[in-house]
Image 1 (cartoon, one colour):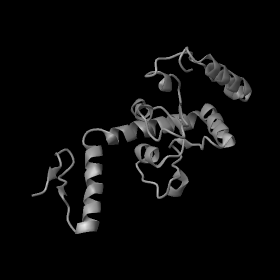
Image 2 (cartoon, rainbow, N blue to C red; image 1 turned 90 degrees about the horizontal axis):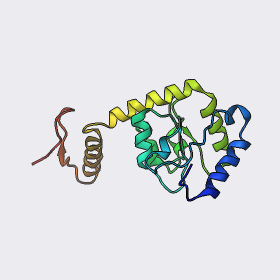
Image 3 (tube, rainbow, N blue to C red; image 1 turned 90 degrees about the vertical axis):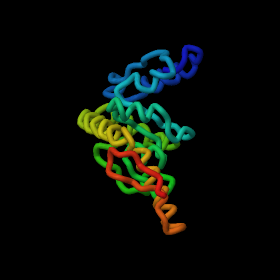
Length: 180
């Protein structure tokens, strides 16, 4: 829990654990001070309920390590984790989440965050399914996938604006080439 220089934050976290339902509280371990790089993934579930960081390295690490996650609704995180581009600014605009996907919780709605944390602690089947889905999502992002996705969007925009496709996207596994 946070750096050793922030005992007030650590105390607030300990109070929150004590206030949790008993069946949840017994499953929470306060890991104590961690290096910044290790802290987000010190537990079994990544909780990334930030209003201000729309996507960070911890989300990618959770995918690669197959960690289930409770996440704040962000279109960027939703695209990264579930491979979809929400139509609006909130994740629900994109349709219902998949049953094996992350739990989305608005950090400004304490009851929603509480419910997501209780489910994350109590639902072992969801944790396994979400972890597996995250490993699968990470595999899809490996290699040239992100480059190909970016160039596909770029081609779509150029085609809508100018009627051209500036990039030739060959078969997967071959590098995308600029058209001539």
